[in-house]
Length: 172
Figure: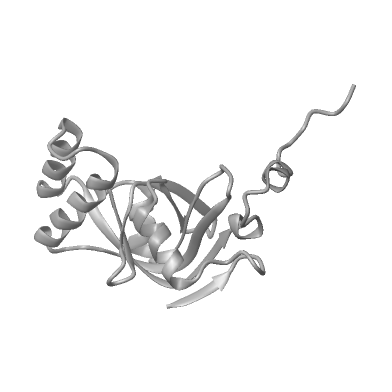
């Protein structure tokens, strides 16, 4: 797996990037391309499998992201957050719809486990929708990751550096 630093000195190691994607509860922002070449972004819940380095999400068959993936499987993705220390992982990959229902249910359950408690009405509903073919599970095989962790600039937790990013109102 290729890992690139998003900005010199603040990139994550491969181990750190895998850990971040495994532990993060943020949404994955998926980028697909329309037939006219225009980009579309889609926030999705995801699961990262650190052993295969693949990402998974579920969606409905008729939605734009699904249509775009069927026609143009190259996607971009980003998982980050807007609180200090700013950090994230993004990349490019190839998406494919998982046809095997047992694999789709297994991956779907892992996605849901990251965001909702097992056995909740939402969890049961989504898994039932996957069983019925009303939701699909998509696998992304990344070509590369780009990462950043601005906390590396501030190893001692210097409040001045942390607060330097804040937008301030102009003095009156």
